[in-house]
Length: 195
Image (tube, rainbow, N blue to C red; front, side, top):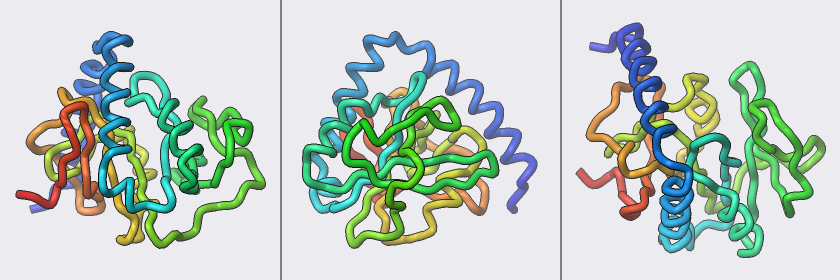
């Protein structure tokens, strides 16, 4: 039976636990793991078949996407980054260079106002940041539900980036939580549909 308050409390406790674990990984090690994760993503069939990449701009101890942003910009694929608002709404806007970025809501850089907004693409792929993922592609995020609300188009391939030590067997989930199609760690690319 679905128990929303229990799930919420479980997630809150796990969010603190996993955030502390992620923060405890030394910066040099995080950057090396991030480099391998991004390389695994760039080598994946899902990335190869995409024409549009929805990607986050990393902050704090998230899997670092700085070099990946540059790689996608050089690839000929279209790249869009999120613009987050206080009311848990999010849109993605296309960028053509880092000059299109400005300081945003969470101190992360985001596309400036006036840039074209992503609406749809034939082969879009969205990379989702999180504090932890499980092997079925569900995640513990920051508690605002931005990506769960945004990713209603089933044609968008959803990809989670996470350090391998924060990929667990199973996480609590609510009825509105979305799961990723793929999870990428420094050990490889995992298809969450394979049981």
